[in-house]
Image (cartoon, rainbow, N blue to C red; front, side, top):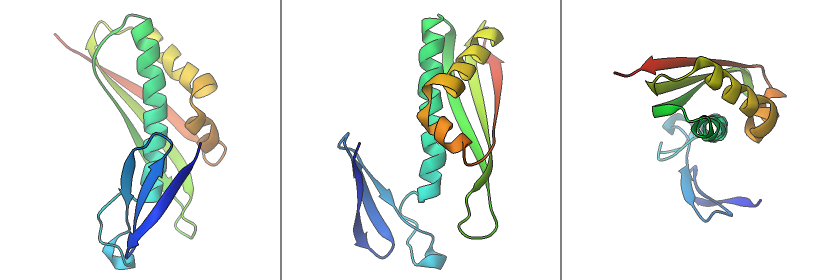
Length: 139
């Protein structure tokens, strides 16, 4: 995998990767940015959320769970001193649907954690990750 960022001026960069997609990275105005894009650490949290979300929804589809809505939230605490690394993360899976089996959700989350999600495997070595889920039953 290859990725790069290209300076656009100020603190703004355009990021690209093998997929061909682009995104904007920028910093807060107080550090010279214009707040026009994601912060790099936000992207790390999003990478964790996206990686495990793709695993979990794929597994739940195979288990024929009726999921009509799904989101994964990451709440990451950071060190107060530089380099402001993540010190702890909580990942919350919120599933909506009819008759979703909690055991199937737990198994899907566990498989993502232990086997499939490389972002989680890497970040877990830097800081503890707590996993939790909520099921919202729809009529």
